[in-house]
Image (cartoon, rainbow, N blue to C red; front, side, top):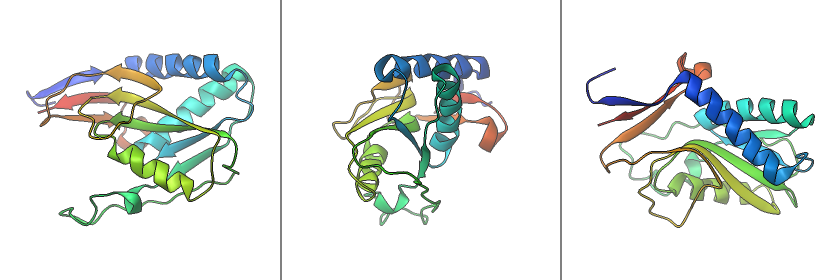
Length: 178
């Protein structure tokens, strides 16, 4: 790590944080009977899969899980210097009338979540949508908040919070970079 990098969550802290977040979801949703999980590509999907496993083990249930690519719904993709990295959306269950839990790694301006909400509405109308994020770094540009937050980190506008996950990056860690 460079001198301008600070660890926000270690591997062990990430594990404990996901466990705590799972218990918070269970407090609100009990047996998770109708709940479905949607991870935002890319790292939100990895975190969603982990949370799903914890919830299923603790509540002895089966949760449907989807993957959501929001790139075509972004409000800034025409002004990006590079083409957006297009992933894919997989939602193999009925969204209408059921509560959804959207999972992402970092909540910043709120624009990713706005795009996610718009994308989800193309698939149906859930009864409720909740948001779970591993890190909330502030600086909202839209009136969006997370229902479940792993860690809140005070940041400057020019800083970045990067979340690394074993499945994609070969390590579990969240760092704050200048």
